[in-house]
Image (cartoon, rainbow, N blue to C red; front, side, top):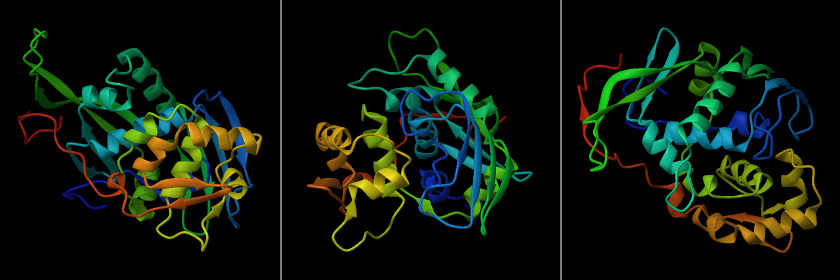
Length: 269
């Protein structure tokens, strides 16, 4: 990623494939030592509370970004927090501002110790989140405010370096946000980090191991079936015990449209 790019990737491959996020929507605060993902020559320790709902939040921030830049080795991403809340919600509802703030705090507290042949990180993910001088014209008739400030996510130099050099992946994260089951979301994210699939698809059991899902395969298969419509939006389908990716899925192509008018374009802070 370079300053002035038109579109940020939704995510990159390494954080998903190395299981930085717990495979649940109810993550716990813990120190995790991850060494069984199917990849060799790496070590990863994650301290914090990061799960699939945190992956939802960060992917929506990247996907819905209004503008971005790299300054002093830090990626800065400006986003409308209201649009992020709506994107993460189900059936038109949205997460509360206090819930989003709690998730943001988890990101600021999380610590990684990652050592691979390509990437070495010892530090955090998000350095701080501040209000931007960019504002969004508020068109909601019930609101008394004319403008609302956008938020600027400032990532650590370590995370910025990872995002800059890692394999980018582009997709609409909103169907993932609507999946109730954390195990299914974790597996779907792992699938979406791939450009190609094995001949005959992936075995569900292998995907569970790769995504850090420790559950009975029969339960995960049933949850896959319950999430069939949302998975289809991302081009993912389950046939017996095989998972397939259809690259022509709509969510793998479209970028996010802007939701309104920006004021004071020249400023971030």
